[in-house]
Length: 220
Image (cartoon, rainbow, N blue to C red; front, top):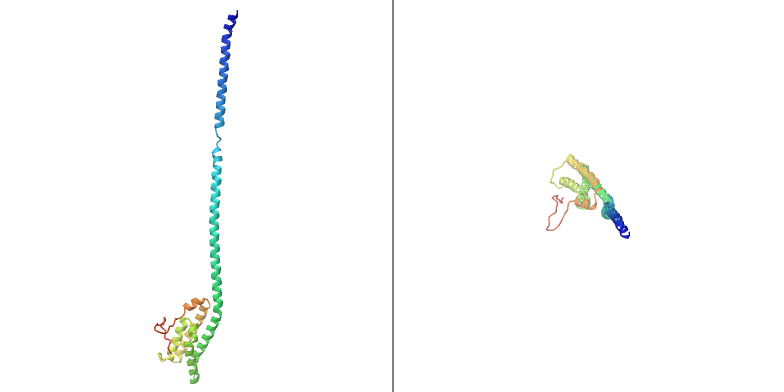
């Protein structure tokens, strides 16, 4: 009887073992699938990895833009300072020119008065005094304040007095009016000049072995 029981139990036992092995295999398969699922990364994982790189790039770009803005502001500040300095220097020069302009105006009026007296006076003594005053101004104060156009006008009228030109009253008055126009234009121009510009608009005279830089005669 014992031997029969053992024989009958053997197939049942083998079946149970087979089922158990199948279950184990299924479990292993599930484990592998779970591992595979866990290893599978979501679609946004790449973007997540790029976040530090993007952050660093934005920081660098911001830093570079800050440098550009800083340099631009520094350039603007420098240009503004240079412009302000230039305006202040120009204002100072124009203030310096104010008494010079007044002196120019007074000297021009003296010379014009002398020219008008020479051209229109019938009194020989008055003409003589006016002629002397003209040459004194011509060789003196006028050199300091006259511009090139006025200097030319003085020379042109002077030729009526030094014998180089033969001038009647009409011609002398014409040259007197031309001189007055040159003086008016000179005063208007000088009012807008710096001292350097004024000096650049003058004849330069020299003495000694060097020739004068202008061709206008300075002799009466």
